[in-house]
Image (spheres, rainbow, N blue to C red):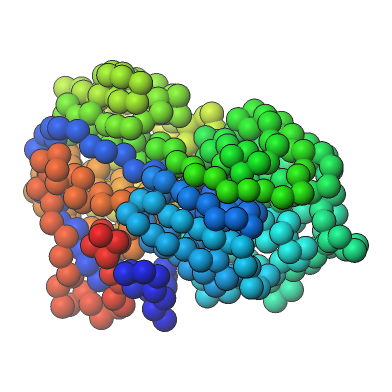
Length: 458
């Protein structure tokens, strides 16, 4: 099944992209790279626009397959969208249905977050259980219990979450709710739902990620009354209605971190902009431990100078402000060519070490025990054909290819296109010898066509 929005035609996320990425390693990078808007902020803010019955404008929206899929979900709900480069105009005045389509939600986990805004606006919502990258279970039980605490009747049947608000006004009621785990998705879902609730809502043990803060700032720009975002407690005073706003998405800290690691592993000197350094504190700290120099060149610009000898370091992924799970794979690539042994512990998602086998194909020396990887540094990597297993793994393989001798060919680019805007073109601008092309005929048998977001969104 092919869905379309604007000029982009995309296929289901579980179908493979038949194109491959060739990267010839061993060359230093130089120049500067522009960081796109944050994927994880843009997706949830697009969902948050459902709260507002007036037109909204979002700026700095990244051109990604995931953003297009979220747009398709909104369109299916009756929302009018107009794309113009990185500017997205959204008019959710006439939501025509309270049910999100399974074929779209099953492809993009973030689209499940629409349940909060739909329920708050219409008094009922019917949203399929989410899909997305196969990096862990990521259940929605916290979302469900939180919506129930706000007065909704919620049940799950045949893979569909049904929620409704009893009473004549069909309006959620303010409540106090403690999250068993600081889930980003549950925090965002409940915060959005509470913006239109009757009374005050207090959410304890919430996620503190910058994307949560960005969503709160967007909602406040619409007229919501949210305080405490970025701390462990968020307080929302419900309002009856929201109004129009023009809002810019924050820069993507994970893309920025990915390019910082790319500069370090290739022993290069490159600059990144725009960035918010405070969002990258744990990443910068670990990079400095490896010997990289990270220099602030202005309020929104960072420079990375890669070390002659990369030093080993240990990493444990944690919820923000800890080290981000979305940077674990990229750092593993860096540490494969470090001086010494590193221990990487993945505590957030249970299936997020599948890139180990692919890195080992390139000559890395990595052993896995449970949720921990032991990385023994080797003098160099060697180019090889590899397969991306998820979004961040795809970036890790590209990073590893920069330090490898010879050519690396990466398949599974549908993952890369979900979260990185024009990564191949940005690397090319930094001097990387890189080429994206259709896969050779012998590898096309198990593939279905998907247009690259890099070309189709221009």
